[in-house]
Length: 544
Ligand SMILES: *[C@@H]1O[C@H](CO)[C@@H](O)[C@H](O)[C@H]1NC(C)=O
Ligand SMILES: *[C@@H]1O[C@H](CO)[C@@H](O)[C@H](O)[C@H]1NC(C)=O
Ligand SMILES: *[C@@H]1O[C@H](CO)[C@@H](O)[C@H](O)[C@H]1NC(C)=O
Ligand SMILES: *[C@@H]1O[C@H](CO)[C@@H](O)[C@H](O)[C@H]1NC(C)=O
Ligand SMILES: [Zn+2]
Image (cartoon, rainbow, N blue to C red; front, side, top):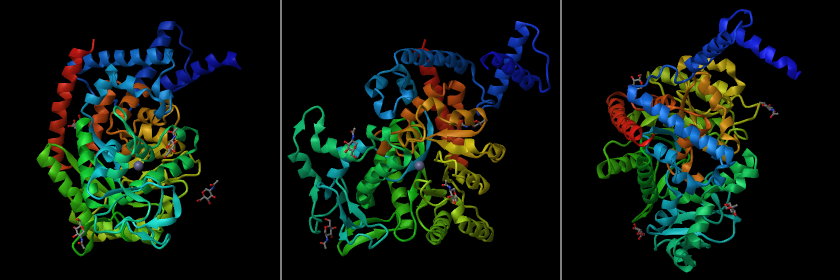
């Protein structure tokens, strides 16, 4: 078998290059010429095939590729190539000191287009600052699945008495002012912190333990995706009640904006849970008890946080929301949530750009299970003369039986969250290219949640080569224990062996395929270009 292989490859290559059965190349020169034709065809087909570089960009491109390859060769030789390893085994200290990290963290990355409410900001901010806000408490006893609290108000309720009641697990955070009963097992965060032993350089035990309960870790390495999700969902149970407390969530949003801005991200889009039956509600304490914020008031909370950040820090930072419900809910509930999303969309066109369904795909409803809802939405849109753009979270799966990608494409999603398993459906690629559908790729998330192991083999490599539009995103950086986009961009650079042309195209995609429109988009382009030009100049002079 091994002997016949070179001949076979030769025949295939010949056909590819010329289209018809061709005579074997008669010389080495002819062979190499044909080979070059194929390489040219490959790069012409790729997602960045039409991107051009200025003269200085072309110079930097060569330097950047050299630096990238230096790292790859050295790290592979030493068996320390991070994309081969599980994220929690990366040597972050070494990474942070490296040249390529400085290059990538300073890169003006445009937008972060795939984030979720509740995991968009910094876990360190939560354990160092956020939880010490007035009234901050943590459930600090063993898990007790027989007891539950309602996220709104944080009071104990019978488990199962509502769809939102959450069991008490260690590390659950909630806010109680001094005039409110605190459920047994919750302790004031300040007292937990001061009573735990602390060593000066590594923070207190309480902070360390709480941080560990709020992030995924290396123990997920040996799990399958469904076990990893089980672990992961607990993090959201723990942060849920605190994230429902409006003053805390408001500060978390400000932190989210700050960490992205610090990471040279100028625009973010958050999938925000907002729906019927209290989904995504916020609350605050008032003179007559509890004030609940739903729908418009939740959107308004985002608006006020953004306005405060724009006034205090920078007018150039922008944000949009994708109203989201959960694919665990039944079609009737989703129907109501879509209706709510349409209403909110018509009232907040400056902030809301579309709709999505989130949560783990494989054990929950298929996108097709809601077909009646989508058909109703299309009719409703025709009546209203508007279109609620869809940003389906689909194809985050390796299950051969998961066909959600077909529906995400057929229903005309503007972008698709993940689309990892698109490789099962090459028949969709033409339509994806024609409709300009964009895949939001979250490399580290996919690895942490066990859809991909070695990042070099991430399926997006193939999609990029097929000319599918892609943006790089981070999904739930807070719950993964990091902030911003630099880890995912750095991983993409070295694992997918990107060059300056691809980086430039990915930055361009992140703004062109965002929900920004009109003057806002125009301003964002100008802002990005200024940052990019300065970055190109800086690294052209600093890299050799
Ligand atoms: C991972 O986090 C869990 C808490 O969620 C903790 O019990 C476990 O010890 C951690 N594992 C490692 C290896 O850090
Ligand atoms: C309880 O305290 C909160 C926060 O300090 C305050 O806003 C609220 O008015 C108080 N409620 C009552 C009933 O006194
Ligand atoms: C595949 O999906 C169909 C439709 O949901 C379901 O009936 C079938 O049981 C699934 N097969 C497997 C192996 O999960
Ligand atoms: C992206 O590229 C297109 C085509 O060159 C250009 O018109 C557009 O301004 C670019 N956008 C950004 C954000 O640079
Ligand atoms: Zn996601």
